[in-house]
Image (cartoon, rainbow, N blue to C red; front, side, top):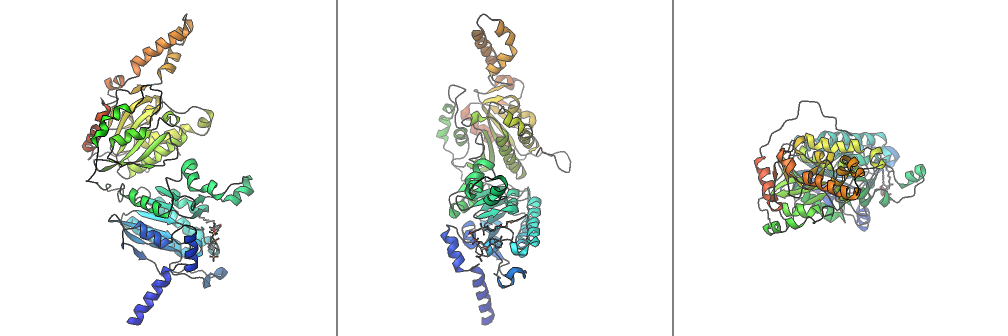
Amino acid sequence: MEDINKKLIEKREEALLGGGQARIDSQHKKGKLTARERITLLLDENSFQEMGMFVEHRSQDFGLDKQKYPGDGVVTGYGTIHGRPIYVFSQDFTVLGGSLSETYAEKICKIMDLAMKSQTPIIGLNDSGGARIQEGVVSLAGYADIFYRNTKASGVIPQLSVIMGPCAGGAVYSPALTDFVFMVEDTSYMFVTGPNVVKTVTHEEVTSEDLGGAKAHAEKSGVNHFTSPNDVTVLKEVRDLMTYLPQNWQSLAPHKKNFKFDSKKLETISSILPENNNMPYDIREVIDQVIDDESFREVHKDFATNIVVGFARIEGRTIGVVANQPISLAGVLDIDSSRKGARFVRFCDAFNIPLLTFEDVPGFLPGTDQEWNGIIAHGAKLLYAFSEATVPRVTVITRKAYGGAFDVMNSKNIGADFNFAWPTAEIAVMGAKGAAEIIFRREIAAAADPVAKLTEKEAEYAEMFANPYRAAERGIIDDVIKPSETRSRVANAFKILENKKEELPMKKHGNIPM
Ligand code: HXC
């Protein structure tokens, strides 16, 4: 018996070493942790249960028969985060560069299937040189098996991807199919084709970091939702985000009963908006004064900054916040902000997270760039996402709500449940000056002093429409509220909507404009 146990202990020790001490040291030298160290930080202490520790690849080609490592380059299993179950895989760069083989893919698919059957979230820690080149097409098929499962799991269980090293070629499509991508500064990158191929094909010279580093994907492509300085901080952020998410599409996010709210904040909320309605202010100040203290987790912080999205809590319950941001491009809607908003709204709707919208939008961004790149289709995504959302939906109009953008931003007529406006709201087809120039064009042209006439007509239009009362008279908004009443009105709205049930018409699936 002792001998048998000894063999098991030896085999375990061998597996724990992955590709060997020298490669572990090299991983550490790059500022990266090993696959197992990462799992230890991600999960609750001693909660990890490994599966497939002794799996080996079956390949005989190119000398692979002599390079076998127990576990074959990916550590898989399950554990808990803040006491809630979670499946995890962690790619081990010390084994053949974390490259994906047929058996490696099978290990990942096995836990993806279990995650689906048990309706439990899955987190992938990515650090891999891509397809195991020696294995050829079976490795590609393995990727396809994972993509297929990512797609089937979409909207059923939360799927998170953490990029902690290379992630290149078709391998990028697994993270891209998941709900949120986290990237580590300096040590992670993602691209479909690397700098060498880029140089050959387009003659552009670009570094890996500039092409596909955390910053590039956070600011330019929007592929990266969260950037973190190192392995330790990113795993902390993942643990934190999980506290806002439910286990699956049929459950609710955890209720944080010991929430805090400093009611002194309500005294200053009225002073956030500048006197001049064309001056900017930071919508995050408004958000902070309405939600539970320190509960805002901004998503996509550096991408399309003219819209702010993120998770927060009101009276301990998770909500998703979508808000126009006046300090960036005056908060207009454009292609990227529409894409960003739409994806976030759809995540929240898929996972029973109520939506709170703060609206201060002067319209859509004009220009050939926007039109030729499809603002019509992209803007329609946000409209579609809000329209099909069946979770509780509340909107607060703080200032401008102009034109088509007013309709898009979770308006009453596209199914929002409660729409409130501050007394400073201006709900109109367009700004008073533009409106006066169009509808009083002849009168202004014929006037002895056209500038004075324009000013007079602008004031006339503003008096009529640059306020919330016209919309309130028609029931297009439900109430005009003082800024200091916002938290209590929003909290009450979500409370009364707690049992909201709304079904979409029967269909195979909708056809969101892509
Ligand atoms: C097999 C690989 C490998 C791979 C790396 N290794 N990538 N083995 N298949 N794809 C091995 C190396 O031979 C080396 O083995 C060890 O991993 C560490 O690699 P290094 O090159 O020493 O590390 P580093 O300098 O950090 O460079 C990392 C790297 C580089 C940038 C990822 O290894 C690289 O460019 N690899 C190839 C990437 C690639 O072209 N992959 C295929 C992409 S196409 P030893 O024994 O020396 O330690 C693809 C298609 C997916 O993935 C399609 C899905 C649809």
